Image (cartoon, rainbow, N blue to C red):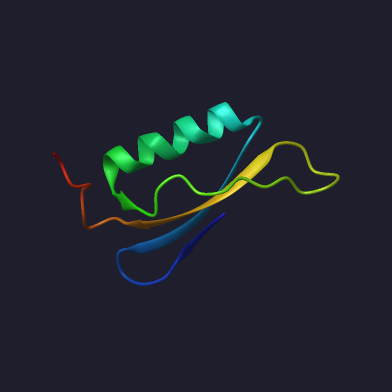
Length: 65
């Protein structure tokens, strides 16, 4: 699920089959946009997979070292 918080701000609830895949998706998003980073993962009883919430600013790219 995605929600728009403004012109360039998004809230993404990402659900995948397992935590490894979820962390890989969040890491890829961090390469594209400035994000809240890898957040805690939760499971919803009776639902398959794991979910995490990511906040993203699509105007900004992540800081480079």
